[in-house]
Amino acid sequence: MILYSDEYTRKLEFEGKWINCIHYLYEKWMAERKNISLFFKLSVNTWYTLTLDGPELSLEKDEYDVLTDMLCNCFKYFNDSLYANENFQWLFGYMMEVRTDLFLNSGLEYNTIAQMGKSLIEKASNNENIFAQLLFALDNCSEKEIERRRKKVREHILEYFDDSQEVDQYFIEILTVPIG
Image 1: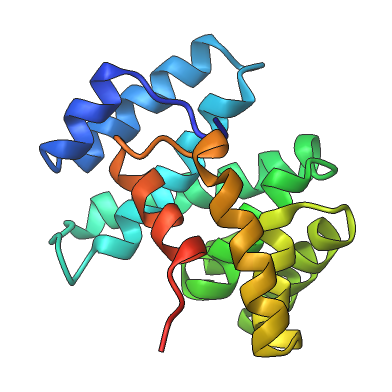
Image 2 (image 1 turned 180 degrees about the horizontal axis):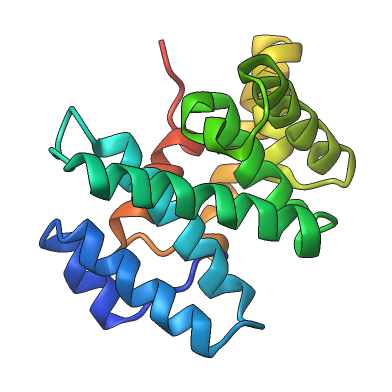
């Protein structure tokens, strides 16, 4: 699995207690700094919670500010320590491309963030990451090639994502269901 999971994160996600889940993940990661699966989960859950703000959640301004700072700090940690990891490359690339605005506290310009996201996906794709190859194909390849790559992703998706976790379900759907 790419993203950390345990019964507590499953429970908090199911109950929609996103802020509590992020606090739990952050505290746990502070105690286990070498656990990259835990760092993945912290980064992605923070992004996902910010993405839910508006459509499904109503974050207070201070909660929103804390979470955007946390996401940008996760991005900085990724840049400083885990930049060569292709799973981080495509995940951060995807998050940066889909919600560029959430990374503005990083000090980078909007277009720079979006372009960096695309570049991270391309880099991971060149490193043979199947998820990055699919994301890269969506912008650069024929429908036939996209479907070929999506089929490969479908065959392996449950090796990487836990379908009992809501955030993982989001990525399973995004990566396996054609849009349009």
